[in-house]
Length: 154
Image (tube, rainbow, N blue to C red; front, side, top):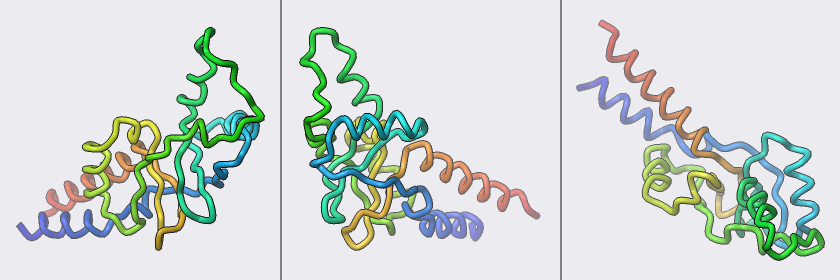
């Protein structure tokens, strides 16, 4: 019983700050060519936050961007257009203090895009970084593994 309470307390202390990473954001006025160039240059980059004056405005997913190029009959991609038309304007935005348990519920119950797009983390309402479902899952596994090891100790 005491170990279960310790596990719950530890899980409550692990926050979004633990699963975020810094990605230099673009602004809504950034040209599509520049967004495409970032994804080309940064092969591990899956999402690109769109931030204006420190306030998150949206998120651009690599796969969604590429998907815009694929349809052969779609309007041609215009690199000189601004990226605001590419972004998800309603990304999951969370406080850096949210627990990973709460964050898990938001991802599970939220928009389907949140699993692919990830989430934007803010501190005092200002952009602090981005996180992914994979990073969150990794932290949850570590937390559960630590709790399981504690339960196994005599």
